[in-house]
Image 1 (cartoon, each protein chain N blue to C red):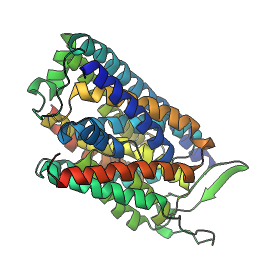
Image 2 (image 1 turned 180 degrees about the horizontal axis):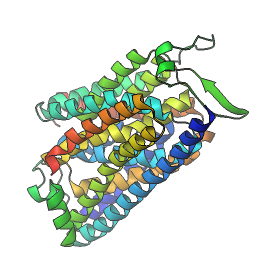
Image 3 (image 1 turned 90 degrees about the vertical axis):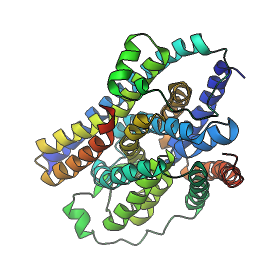
Image 4 (image 1 turned 30 degrees about the horizontal axis):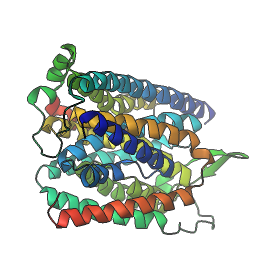
Length: 126
Length: 278
């Protein structure tokens, strides 16, 4: 029992670090994009009362990366949000790896199911 | 009001929501949408999209601190994430079909119910119970750090907890919230986890649940970068501070304060939805 407990704790620490890196990277991108966005549109009136839906280029991974690379503030924010959405997915993938190393097959199956459901939600983005 | 002032106000409101949400385990998400719609006049679809990404930030920011402290139960979290992600996908698809009035009304009812749940007295669990065979088989029993060393606990009623989590997932995907109240109810009451374990495990799970439906929302064009930016940054800062001071805080008092905020915003949400102003 004790070797597996040690692995659990080590796993917890690494998981915590992983979540932190993902969130910090995302926050930095969102903040950087936010500065560009506010510098260009800060003095205009906010327009969120009527729903238009985002343009296609801010709905897909390829379009978002392209918009961010061209220096669009909204594009960089959206890229940061994409990193944020990816963080829990990477976390689940990491858990799958950790459970497999522990040869905990019940949790390998459970974690694979969660990962498959997450993938189903992301299919529209590619 | 220009965009700069709007962003500053939204960011400040989100900071307070993130702080209270992380400290009570009820999540900031439940107040973000009503804050945006009833106070700032934002369309509910944009509000739900921005709230959803902020919920991921709250969850991941707080979880990073909690995981190190050893309160969350990763096996319980992962098992229940099967239910919440499945429900979240269903909720996200339903959000594309239902009218904004219907979503706003469901939102108001869920808020009032959450507030009521969070203030009703916790179940008596003084009598010792034998371990639950299913929980033992799934290796869910664990311990958390107490003042005098690790405190062991047993997990109960796994199927009931799983079903409640399915509903929590549907509401999360439909309303862009973390469904923290329902998650804490499932783990705290049904599965008999200690309060801090259910709070932190719930926070830990919210990010995965919200990520399942966030993909659907992003694809649908509901996630607006200009609105999400101040909301996400504010909530993240609030949740990070909230998670740091959690071990010293008294959950009972916090729950009452947060419940009062939820009731006020929930009533406003219902009134505006039913009068067609949403």
